[in-house]
Image (cartoon, rainbow, N blue to C red; front, side, top):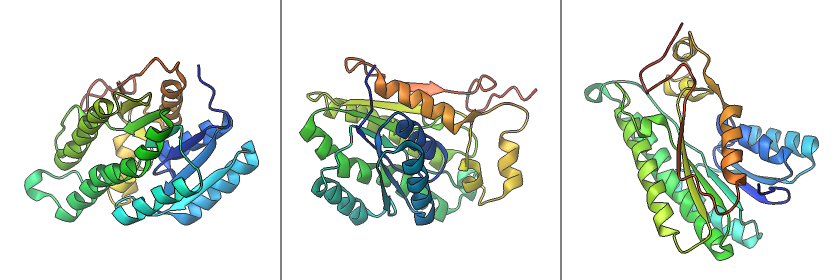
Length: 256
């Protein structure tokens, strides 16, 4: 197993859910953390809490990952401050709406495409050159079961997560001549703010998604990501799907 102590771990979309859980887990094991997100108050709160609890350094960067120029500036700042991540968790993403394609909200489509595909690419472009220069490390691309199995109403979200899967495979090929490992993880039902965002903060609708079974939690996915990134450097888990025991496909749940 590889020790992450004193290594730098970069996590996009770290103000909640899986990203936040990863930040705390890696910090607990002695890594210094770079966290990004759009909510500055949350970033500062997480930074202060982690530094007090674990005595590591946390570097918060507040910007919108859909902003190409903000991502370029972020990459330049990392380079100027010698903050090359050993582990890069490309986590930021979201779902909006659950309508049939013919009834879809185009603004929701744009937001998902801008975040899940373009933002994913902007973040990768900002960081990859730095990691290639050091010729080491691990990249985790956050996909979804929606990137392998289409479900009713998923349409554009499905398409963006299929793109993440394809881009992760392509990234593995493009980095063939390096020592950088590239992995994607596709979680099923994870109880985070995901459904709240999808349903525009309608808590009743969000809660119904997880009724009748025990979903995964953000910490469960963080544990798996930690395992994937701390394996011996000759091991690369290129792709992994994980679901709650009560979920057997994107649409099949045992709700008791």
